[in-house]
Length: 175
Image (cartoon, rainbow, N blue to C red):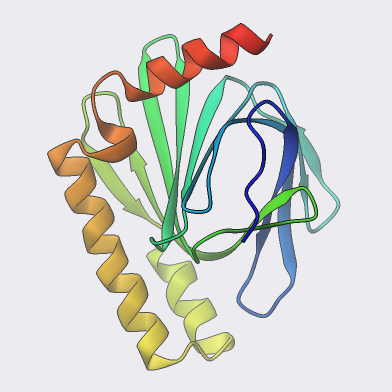
């Protein structure tokens, strides 16, 4: 797999299991691009929803994608601290100047004090039945959710103290 070059601007594309495009984030700057990890940043970027709605993000965000894990992490820098929004998703692929992944609905919101809440379990169950997720996929997603929760509790990867701030400082050098 080809990796994006540091310093280029790319899009982020989220799909559903049935292949339908779910959401597109415009203009994310690549801070690190390897075959295994892509770290990007954006601030006040336009987001297009599959139903045609558009909105703009409110704060700077550092986006963390890993090719070996079934989740991605967005660290949002707000005045009262860093909030994380974590998507249970397929590992990313990079093609046609975009990071692409399948969003599997389960999300984890993490607050600055590192408490967290699991979101959208009902949506996951609905889509699991509707789109006929294989049992093996369901097992993988639930296993990966446990890995993500362990990373949060142990403050690993993007949850390590200072990591989001360090990437944000690098982002500021490009602005």
